[in-house]
Length: 174
Image 1: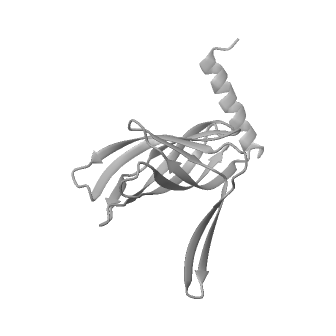
Image 2: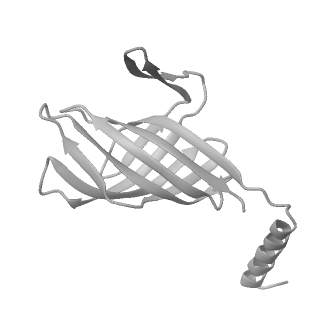
Image 3: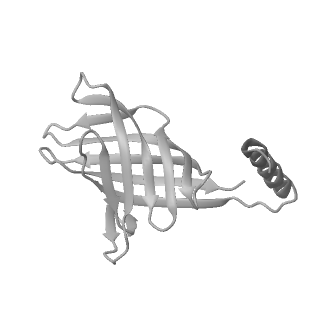
């Protein structure tokens, strides 16, 4: 048989040929999830159920709600390893982060920050912040995934858990 690197090259050539013939179609995925984060040992472990997000604007109103479905489906799983870059100012800490999100029965996406994240502390001690990511690959149905996502996080003063609100989109295929 062909050596492994030759077989890989043959597959890439066949995929390129298929795309040139108009047979390739990239599939776009988009998601928005609210994860409950329970960090342990410097690693973020978070879960999110299926949910609907609703924003109302107009008539003097601005409101947002999350309606989580409490069915017997397995939750999406977030695992990431943050790294503090500058923690000398507790009111504005900078950090990097990388990890993955597993979507049960489908596969996982891998991500790493594409900028520096910032974490802040409100006057009452509650923490919040944000970071953006590039999606760098995946497994299962998401092999070769590429895209972007962002997260915003919030934690109550004194709590060991926090909320990570994530919105992202990515493509699989050419």
